[in-house]
Amino acid sequence: MRPSRRHPLPPQAPALPLLLLLLAVAPPPPQAAAVGVNWGFAASHPLPAAQVVRDLLLPNSVARVRLSAASPDALAALAGTGVAVTVGVPNELLRPLAASRKAAAAWVHDNVTRYASGVLFEYIAVGDDPFLLNHGQQFQPFVVRAAANIQQALDDAKLSSKMKVVVPCSSDTYQNASTLPSKAYFRPDVNKTMAELLTFLANHSSPFMIELNPILSFRQKKNISLDYYLFQLMSRPLSDGRNKYDNYFDASIDAVVTALTKAGFSNMSIMVGRAGWPTDGAVNATPATAQSFMTGLVNHLARKSGTPLRPKFVPTETYLYSLLDEDQQSIVSGSYERHYGVFTFDGQAKYHVNLGQGPKALKNAVDVDYLPSKWCVLDDNKDLSNVSSSFSAACSNADCTALSPGGSCTGIGWPGNVSFAFNSYYQQHDQSGESCSFNGLV
Image 1 (cartoon, one colour):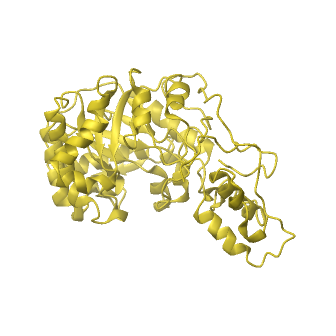
Image 2 (cartoon, rainbow, N blue to C red):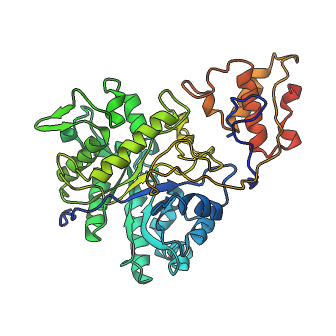
Image 3 (tube, rainbow, N blue to C red):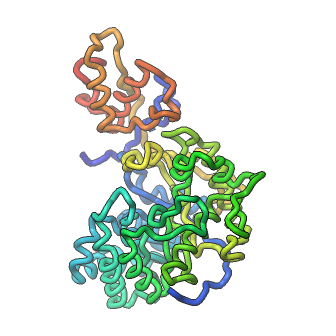
């Protein structure tokens, strides 16, 4: 069903208040830190793209945006704004784009050339973490050829001087069991493809794009303090030979530098396509923790101190993750994946971070079109012998991630969690009558 443009009411609803309805190339010259923000579209009730640009990007002085896909509405809204744009190519398009130069030319025509007179394109990001370990070999064979065909299409359209082709690489593309940056290396199963990719990037002076997932790293490495991830003062920094690391970000960049060096591309530029912290769905996923990470990262980049392996050099660009919550985002990595937004799904800031506006408070979306104040809750006077199956059915088609261990609603207990699930399903389906039945339990 096509999502309605009208939004469920924000969390402060009168009933059930806890319901969150919610290479080798020449070394790059030192430069100011370029910071942007990711904008994804995996939401059941997205704000209109024009409103996102008008109310969130421009008033908050966002200079760069990375689109998860080539949304015609978003590209049209960004035309003439001067906001630099990185546009994504979804994984499902890699095979056809790799198989056909004609398909790549058509994609470039429809999603780049058509908007190039008004949109300031910087990069085309081919794939969405195609080397992610969870994907196996599903996308890997098609990545480099798809990127090459997109590059050829840009050349043919005389646009290659205005933008570059990059490939987002998840942080598990390299391995580092010891946590020491000096021990990092690209996974053996991607070595051949990575050599081809790095050669392609080097030939076109394109940077290596790394995607960082600090909360996942924190959850996997139990012996490392949360302070290390939040840019807090460390009494005992991580020692790696002569080098000292007091934060996850620098260690991650130098792990990439090490992996690139071992692959023969020691001077390749690096850009960070994703770095953020979620606000719900897991232990330590809160607005306060997210603010600590995001503010620490932005301030760290502004100092331009670089890393032990690359002093005074910062990533060419760093894209904060993310602009808005996405309630249809995959939760393969964790329930927190739907709660990365600096803003809620309806464009209300969850915490303060400098997106470009400096110390001023973030501007929120205004005149949001909400659904009526109606709710779908469990009637606990009914026969509840089959309530578990109805609960599971609701959560399989709605967003119940706030009920996950450590989530903001994990403590509401029974029957509140059932009402949460029923109401989430009801709101996601635009409050239709048939979406609030659940076998007569409401």
